[in-house]
Length: 180
Image 1 (cartoon, one colour):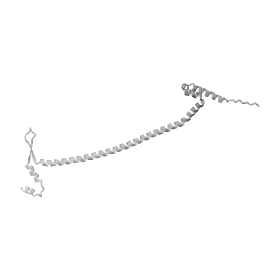
Image 2 (cartoon, one colour):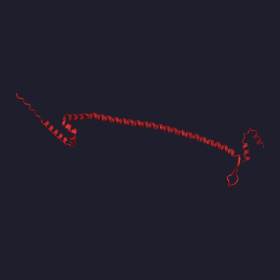
Image 3 (cartoon, one colour):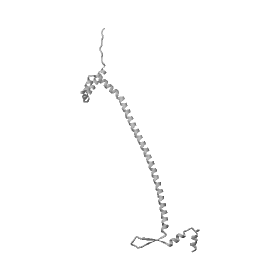
């Protein structure tokens, strides 16, 4: 018996090998890849193809978990930033409303105090004007000389009689004055 161990490669597989070979050649002669291959790491990986394949497979497989982790970190950072900003906005709004309430209360209090002080001023000035107008009306004011500012106040007898007339009607003195 004769053994015939000739394997034939299909035509499609040969075409695939040719296209992969041309693609690898174009990749290998790319200026960036050529620069990487001229480094010591590139030469080491060129001498150890299994290790280069393991690094390539690890890099390809690590992109998904690294991408998911970076997406999670980015979303977490954005969420924390937005939460912090919202918390700050809430706290600043709360502080602003509190300040507005305090300032409004102070404004109302200032208005009330000014009303009370104004009423006290008006009342005291009216009382003093009334008191001094009664006192001054008893005196007659005469000027000594037009060029000087000297004035003399003399008690007016007519004013005193008027003051005596203002006594209540039931007093004995008033009745005596009325008879005269």
